[in-house]
Image (tube, rainbow, N blue to C red):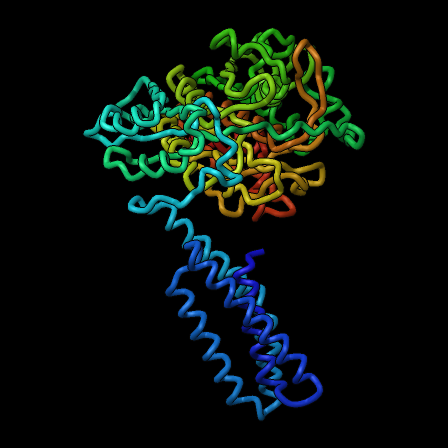
Length: 528
């Protein structure tokens, strides 16, 4: 709840009550409540103006509305029927007014954070900004025409260690090569806010953001209430599919049969990159489709990346483990770049660097089951990385997050141009932990509760999370791109949305993917 809006609406409504019930047994109570609400509202107004969270023009408008409403009820208060009718109508409209004012305030704050002439006011000592990489606290973008040496005076005064953050192969296609990482020595911890202020004010600096640390949402082991899938016969021979309840609502039998009966062949073997804790490339149900990017990414001490890889592209119909959207070995190859440590931690820089490496290695699809709460200064580098992927026709799929909140507040799930995935359960209802997608442009959903998949050392486990939902989408998008390699993110989302099944909360989850219907629509469109 937004306390400013709540206090304003409470003041407005009690003002109406005060005008209607100035006489009678309720007059003293209503008068006291009105003045209490007015006192709280004025205090919050002053605080909002000081902190820059409120627009002066909006405050003036709100005050005029208070005055106009008071005058209106003064005119009609003698006619109790009209006054009470308008009071009931006004009270019932409060939820709609609240949503309108909330959206208006959100747009105002977004405008402030996106205005290039104004740096967001963020204190380094705030709770949001203490969670930064101690070895590389800041990411700084240098304006074209300037060099990092132009900030040497600040560097030397505070003994800053500066290194280039990213080295994309196609530097002309992005500004990411203009980013530098800054390590502030511990001896200058007390001067951090001053250092940030000086850098932001320097004419050579276009943008500055904190290199925040991220942690995986915990894998939720919840096998106790797994529902057995209502399928009597599977068309593929993977022996552990009986533990995958999602096989039925995803219509996997129809999917495999359609690809077989229509003799669908890939035009290209899609390269799917899992950016995570690594992937056990020697797992029995992954190794035939796994292609090593480097030694580090082919090991997984946590298990998160391996679980996601199996959901996206476990080898199907091989008499081992489980199946996936990859009907056989011709359609998809899986690679891994480790962007999270063995403890499940990573930084914004590590993740963006992994995205660049995947694009430069020829990725067609990137799957990332990770992210964190956004701050005002955090999104530009992610946006640049996504745009670098899109310019190379790489589709990026991101987990919405497990906080049960609006995914628009989480990065990189809120980055423009990515497909963001919410999680649904066996009843096609949004899981209690899944973030929502109402403000996400490309939002879809997939099964994310009690998902059985691969785990390191040839094991299989059940976990829950939007981390499990995202690779379902990434796996299906990989198949679509193998059939039509030139497909971009807009077309991929159009197909997923048009063929998806409506959930119980479609506004918050988007449509749940339907692999059979998606492949069918694509092939029909291509044949016309």
